[in-house]
Length: 277
Length: 269
Ligand SMILES: Nc1ncnc2c1ncn2[C@@H]1O[C@H](COP(=O)(O)OP(=O)(O)OP(=O)(O)O)[C@@H](O)[C@H]1O
Ligand SMILES: [Mg+2]
Image: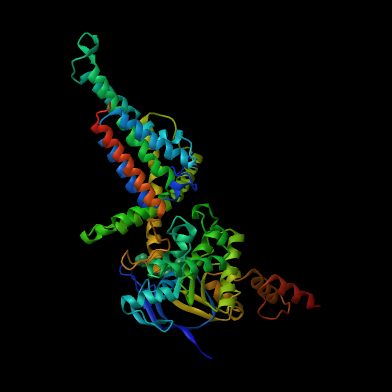
């Protein structure tokens, strides 16, 4: 049953000129097909951890296996990067080519895939993310959400088993944000791609299978979103917010209203409040 | 103010010339430039001009765009014309005003040089009008590929060019935003003498450059994340392929060359 795709044992990473490690003793296992969200205040090491997963950085301590591979040699690094794609925060700064489909092909071209195969996979990937109609467009004409979908297509074309989204919705408008988040959820559900979703939005994190909260390079809290968010005080102490409804529930509880644990959405709150009396 | 700036002057289309392989167009343009230099007389120039105009007409692009590129070099054309007109020595004096005299040889030389310059610009214009910048980049990369054995960085240069093309609109947008932000704070970019205006650009350029470096860093990371490792072992989705029309184009250019050489030989004009 257990089919771990990311295995981290005491992973540490320290930037060369830094006084303290950015990632400290992180141990965790991610199962294939899981949707894992990572929260944490600015500078808590989320992006550093993401780059370790993608072999853009190599651990300075501990072991990290991604898709069964530890990035030791250069070739292993490229294999890790292929199997673990990455979508960054700024949609403008990760699109390389001047035409959507060319950008989508970039990764496969780098891998030396034959042209016909690239063509096929690019068409598939663009269709998958709903950008097939814009295949010939210039990325500068697209909205932020569309650019992020192109970035996802570029990663998808390489047939990864994991996709890491590093605050990929942070710069988008609400519509684009929902689009990209829903896309990630669908890829997770329908294609079984493992998703690591780094975010500052509690509402997104609440929908993950599992939630990790990072603080000063360590995993401070981990578990199902409901369990994690239930610890309202600890979360606040880690410099984070909890979903509005959890805050409201906590305040109502303190005021003597008897509410069950784990209310996260407006709908759930409405149902529970109607059940009172 | 910076909106609507287009890069290059490419007119998308589906004509025969549009569909030529970019390498063919590059080589043909070089050949055309050479033919302009080969021609010794006006008859040759006339032939070349007819050839270029016919090509342009066949693409459906308005002829006036051919001459757009002349604007920046108009001064040079006039200058060479005047220089040749007044200083070319000759025997047949047409006009004498004190020490200044205009000879028939001078007039011929001046016109010859001016027409040659104009033709050079106009015939290279055809290339940029009908070839997208990205196709041009691909064509250049492919043409310079053989030079990689002598360590010429063909792939790197092409990559740099295409990234520059990709980021020009982005940086334009950014410059526009910064400009508006500075204007809202009372900056003035439009009045004052050259020095004052240059000074006013500093608060625009500094954030623009800082932003560009940050972008470059992030882009490099994103390229690494997608397994980029230089040109070695890289394939392309779009393969450049010579087709029948490319051979046809080559023949047409060769025919033009032959005709111009013939005209030279018979000393027509
Ligand atoms: N290139 C670098 N060189 C040195 N130190 C760095 C570098 N990048 C990040 N750091 C430091 O490492 C720590 C973790 O940074 P990281 O970017 O991983 O945080 P983050 O959780 O992604 O933050 P944010 O929410 O702002 O994106 C921070 O203290 C940061 O200052
Ligand atoms: Mg970050």
